[in-house]
Length: 272
Image 1 (cartoon, rainbow, N blue to C red):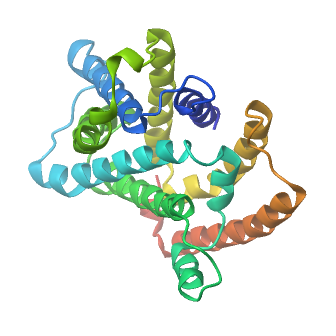
Image 2 (cartoon, rainbow, N blue to C red; image 1 turned 120 degrees about the vertical axis):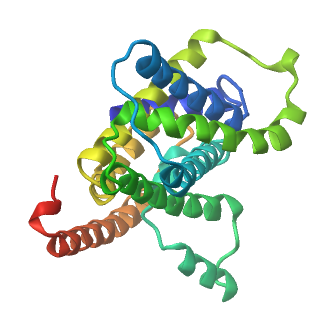
Image 3 (cartoon, one colour; image 1 turned 90 degrees about the vertical axis):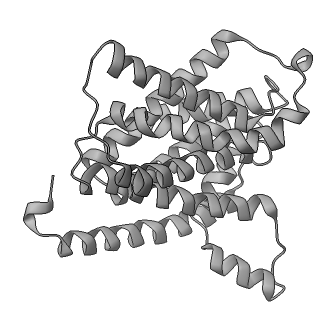
C-alpha cells in the first residue's frame, strides 16, 4: 500500500501543471516500464539473481502479450486521469456503479456523459482483467515465475505497446527546450514504480486477484485520506464521505461473498 501511495504521489507531482509540470503520461509510463525491464534484465542476465524460465511461444502469445497490453493501458489511462481529476475522486469512482449502469443513466437522460468519469470506470475493469490474467500466468500455466522474471517478460512488451500511442499522441507535441528534466526526480519515480510492480506480482503470485481487490478496499480509504492532506486541491465533503461509505459497504460485501464462493469451489490441492 505504501509503495502504491508513493508512486501515485510522485506521478501526480510530476504530471501536474501546478507542481513539476511534465504533462506526458505515456512518456512517464514508458520510463517506468523501461526502467523495470532494465533492472529485471540485469538481475537475471548479469547478476544471476534468479534464473529465467523456459517461455514457449504459446504462453508468450496467450498470456504475456495480453497482460502487457492491459498492464500498459491501465497505467497509461491511470496516469492520464491524474491530469484531470483528483486522487480522492478517482478512488471514490472505483466504488461506484459499473459501466453498464452509468451508460444506462446517460441513455435515459438522467446523467451526462463525462469522458474522465467513463475512462476511469473502464480503467477499473482493465485493472481487474489485468490482475486475473496475471494470476493465470503466475499460477495456472505451470511456470515458476517470481516478480523479477514476471517483469523481465512483461515490462519490455508493455514498453513496445506504449511506443505507438506515444509516437502518435505525445511525441509531436514534445519540445525538448520546454521539458523539465531532473534525473533524480525521474529516477526516484521509476524506483517507486519498480517497487510497486514487484509488490503487485509478488502478492498475485502468493494469493490471487480476488485477495488484492479485497485488500484494495482498505487501500482506497487510506489513499483518499492521505491525498487530501498532501494535495490541498483534492478536497472531499461530508456528503462524499457518506456516499463513499455506503458504496464501500456494498463493495466489501460483494468481494467477501465472491471470495467465499471461489474458495468453496476450489479443491484443497489447489491452494498455495
